[in-house]
Length: 84
Image (cartoon, rainbow, N blue to C red):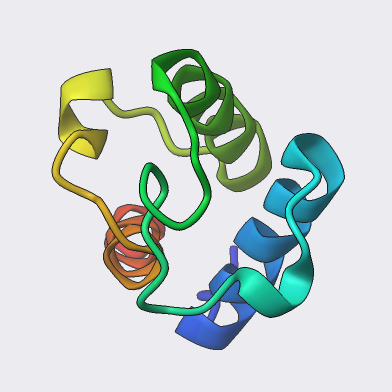
């Protein structure tokens, strides 16, 4: 399995958000927050975690995602989970 760059991971997460949550791609920035900028609720977050696990093959407890409020934090987290 090849290691993906943060830019590649960001692109894949952006694709998940645009395809499954109808978010405009231009609103998805590294500093964007899931609840604030994207207006996601708890159920949306659970769905997002499901898509992330399916796409990246990472299994993580939902609690691990609680502190990942921005795209940048999420991308770094996925990067750490998929390397090593």
